[in-house]
Length: 256
Image 1: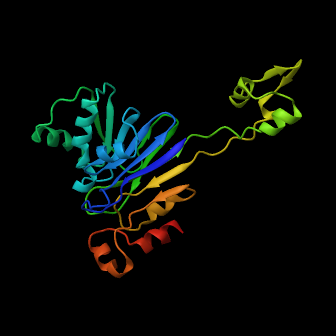
Image 2: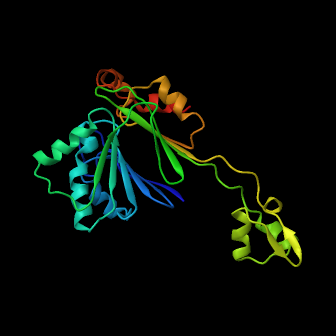
Image 3: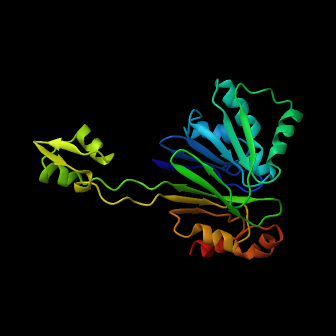
């Protein structure tokens, strides 16, 4: 499973219909949060995204509309009795969030919160995935993220297994797909007979706020999904350049 849930896509301010930036990426093993605008925990409840599998938060930059949801989310997790540690990653300055929590009078959570700074070129190992960091261009220190899945098993040829080899559906299929040989009716069946070649992992690229730049183009090559800043329409391109955002047209050209 690889599921992307857009909790918020509004820029700078929440609206009646949209929350600030926050995206959940859910896998079979864990969920991660890309940015955490205010009200993220409510949006997770509405989307039934679940809190139990949340392992880490990746912040692109420290503008308020991308981080103000963190304190509320931490407190909500504590109220739900969380015990597992939570990791928060971000660009230079992210460790100042701890001081921010103290100034706000945030209680001491019931679980460990680990905060780590990242720079372009760094990577974080997740369960079955690697999160890579790349350079973006914005008004404060910022980074983008590329979630790259490990190499996947080949596709299982159920028709050949069932109709040609006569193997009934069940646990033997799982063994073969895991790479284990089986004995069926006195014959050794090897995985290569019913499982195709390994497949490359999927790739999701998230820019956060940025001007169009070659680093994003390079990182997004071969991606299955590019989530790119598109704050302004083309008739406000001057504002996009002034505030170091992208227009929707520029985002589309980057994808192209």
